[in-house]
Image (cartoon, rainbow, N blue to C red; front, side):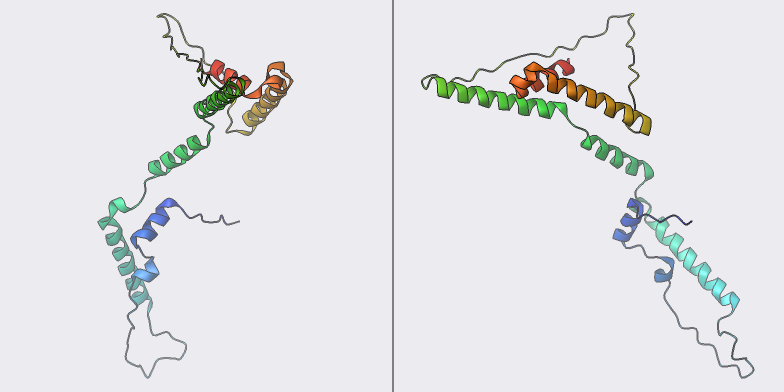
Length: 192
């Protein structure tokens, strides 16, 4: 079974720069050989030596063109970096969710104040400060053996954990009363 050839970034870059394939880069020069009266009808006009010469010249010209423009292609490490960046962009960002939830809470408090007392239009904000604690000398940070999402077994374990956690959150009384404030509190606790 033959694997399907994928279009790569390197191929796309070379197409953008105008690199041509071997067949396109060799100009077709009609080979005009004099008619030989003794030649048989089934014999070709181009000999093996001529074919070999055209292949060699095409190959050499392709090498010269590629060596002249070394930096036109994309390296493998650049491709890896791009893929890693795309993967990281897909991951959920808890800070964005936290800020949006805080804005939702502030808006809710503002509307409640406006309904309750029209003279007092103050928005109360909770201020908190995150303090990073340095490890004391002589302590060792314990690595958590968390399952890896990239392999099948780890993804299965993570999905089971998330479903259990989700069911616990849904059964939580605080979440049933006010879901946004509960989410905000959970995210703050996780960030600590």
